[in-house]
Length: 262
Image (tube, rainbow, N blue to C red; front, side):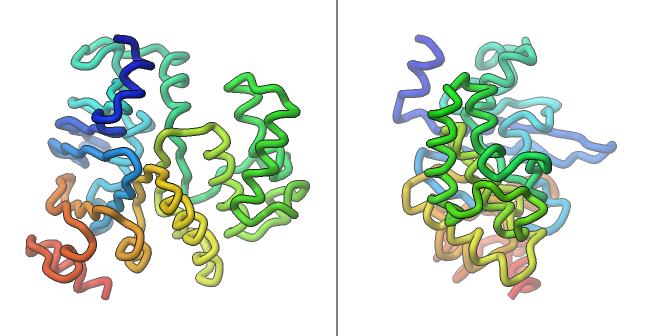
């Protein structure tokens, strides 16, 4: 069975993290983490600073390397030639596998010399080989989708933080990912700009985009998440629907964390 066949198998989790361990700066930041995310789910990661949330997110597309364990995306190992193999993929193959994973960072990472429109169509042309005219047409539609149809010719310096983050979301969507990763996408924004970004993410959830989100926005987590994962000291300590987690958390450390943010 080819990798493409596996990707179309509906009963394979879209993301599967298996026995993930990671050490950074001499500290174990992921400690035997296991997590499956099904297609169409919105999974929110919460927990105290240093719990391992961002490292787990970054390991999904191999921005952080694991010491041991494996990450599968739609049944295909992100970093190894085959599932269960120790042989790492090459740079070109890793880049190809990453195409199916959109990543939205805290600090936008837009190309400052390009317009919003150019930021969105650049990837599909350079990486996917899309014809430029088609990529531009799709980019305009994506900017409309995130509420920025009139900002296509603006450069990042001419946009607010919330607008830049929405361009970053459109840019990630332009690659037609199977899953979207968000690393605290509103943490660098002024308070009045947070809502416009969260509304785009809510719309993606309504469209059943698979999302894995690190955030401190508890109202978003309560309203949108199918599951909330609580991490502490590099481990998953709780995995529950929002209604259960916020009303009756099972783990004492979860209770302590929630008490600090309410």
